[in-house]
Image (cartoon, rainbow, N blue to C red; front, side):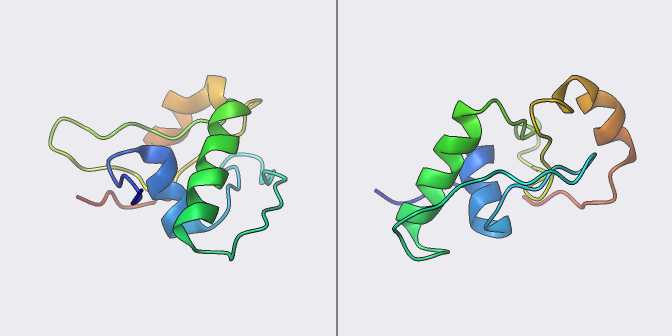
Length: 92
């Protein structure tokens, strides 16, 4: 099944190839048997990030999304503060 680029976790996995917290720098620990960048790799990585309660912002009403922004579970409570100061551009 192809990646769903409307899913913020799958979009982040595809563009970032890893999850690294924009607040503290923590990286999601994940090993896959799939080739990095492949659809299977990105789907598994996105599912693992979701399972571990990482934060990726949903698409905005205009369809734009911060595909490179994420926060680890410890920093997710600060999502509003961190989103307000991010320098990442939104993609549509």
